[in-house]
Length: 395
Image 1 (cartoon, rainbow, N blue to C red):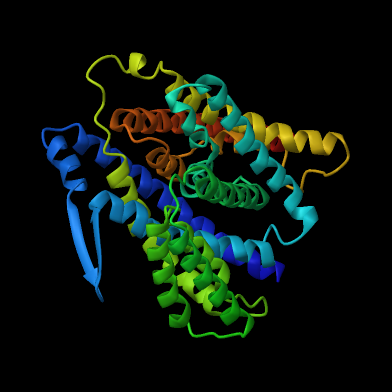
Image 2: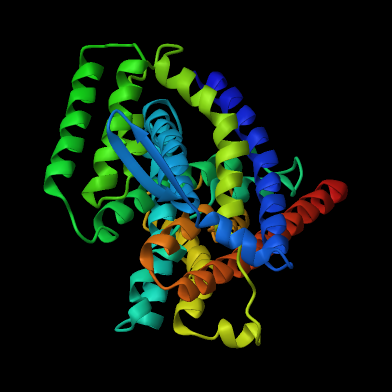
C-alpha cells in the first residue's frame, strides 16, 4: 500500500510540477494582454453575459461568473476527491503522520489571517482576512520542482498534505464567512440532495451518473441559496464512494479530472482572474494601503511563521517529531512556498469585496507576495542542496 501511494504521489507531483509552470505562463500572458492596447476589450469580454436555459431553468451569468462559479466547482470536486483519498489512505490517514502537516496548515491559516486583520480591523477591507490564508498546491509544487531532484519525497508529500488541509480550511471559510443572504429553501434542497448522495454511498451504488446528475442540481441549488456554489463540488467529492482495496469510481473520476482541471480549468481561471491593469501611478502607493499590506505581509511573513512555529512548538513539547527526510531548514523553505497563494487567494478576493479597484489591488498584492515567497523558498532549498553537496564532498 505504501509503495502504491508513493507511485501515485510521484505521478501527481510530476503533473503538478508542469501545471505550476504552465499556470505561471498563463498568468504572465494575462497580465501582458490586460496592460496592452486590447486590455480594456479583453476585460470587457470577461464581463459579457452568457444566458443558458435547460428544462425551464435559466441562468444569466457573465463569463467570469461561469468560470468562478461553474468551472471552479469542478476544481473543488477534485479537491474533495483528493481530500477524501488523503484521509483514507494518504498522508492524513493516521494521527502520527498527519499531526505535523495539520499543525503547519493550521498555523499557516491562523497567523496570516491575524496579520491581515491587524492591518484592517474596523475598515471596509476587514472582510479580506482570509485572502492570505490559502496555499496554491500547483504553483508551490511547481516551484519546489525547480530545486531539483535533491528534495526528499517526504518534503514534497508534506507540502502537498499541508496545501490540501489548507484547501479544507478555505472551503470552510468560504461557506461560513462569505455567505451574505441565504435562501433556506434552496439551501435545504441542496442539503437534501447531499444526504441522498450519502445514502447512495451507504448502499454502495457505483453508477457515477447517479452522483453527477444530482450533483449538478445541488450546484444549482447552492448557487441560488447564497452559499457559494463551488461548495457543491467538495460535497459531491465526499459523497462519491471510495474503496481502499482497489480502483473505484472515486479514483477513476479523480484520474479523469486531473488533467482537464490542471491544464484547462485552472489556467482559464488564471486568464480570467489575473487580467489586472497595472495602476497608472506609483505601484508603491497602490500597495501601501492596509489591505495590500495585510495580504503581502500575511502571505510572505505570516505563512512561513505559522507553518514553522506550530510544528516547532509541537516537537519541543514532545507531542510530535519531524519525519525522516524533513529538516528544520526544509520546513522553513516549505513555509515560504506556502506563501504562494494564487488560485484560492484570488478566488477569495472575488468573494470578499465588491469594489473592482479593491479586488485588483488584492490580486496584485497576491501576485507580488507569491513571487517573493516563491523566490525565497526556492533560494532556501537551493542553499540546502548546496550545503548537502559540500557535506558529501567533504565526507
